[in-house]
Length: 116
Length: 113
Image (cartoon, rainbow over all chains, first blue to last red; front, side, top):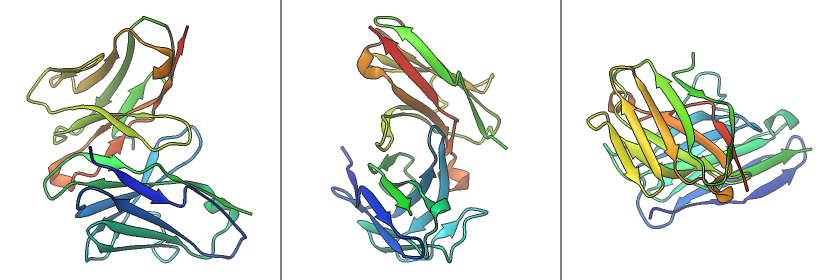
């Protein structure tokens, strides 16, 4: 099956620093990747949609200058949380879609970000 | 506005019993309905999915029932096992809106031995 990895799985950083999270599709090329945020015992909240080679599309209320998304290749998308603050602490999950016109999203294992 | 409504919020089932989780939607343009299983600290894993041209789909112990006229779909877990204890999310998407997933609020399932 389609496998999506994320790195790191956990990160703790000081307030004001930037953190980069990588999302890779290991055995397929993903034209589209999605970034979600999930609070404890809550559903997944879509942050942005990332298409390879173009700018990400951010959901309403998500600061694009704070959450920088880059989809430089068909197997890699990165999310950089800039100048992180404690309120950015959350579980960040990426997903990847196999190709244009396909429906299924395969999710990564998630990254737990804790900002002190 | 919650595009997909999911119930119940939590569910406790005896081992061997049937777990039933329900979802309802409003947007008739939705054309793909997956169910995901999520364990604590892990990403969601695709369980089973259905399209509106069929009323039921079964994969092992998992069955989706789909009622297009009522705009409802449900997940049935037969012979529930303690290992099924997890949070389950339904979702819906439409090719008209770029296949963006609209997730339900999740159901925490506990299967007691």
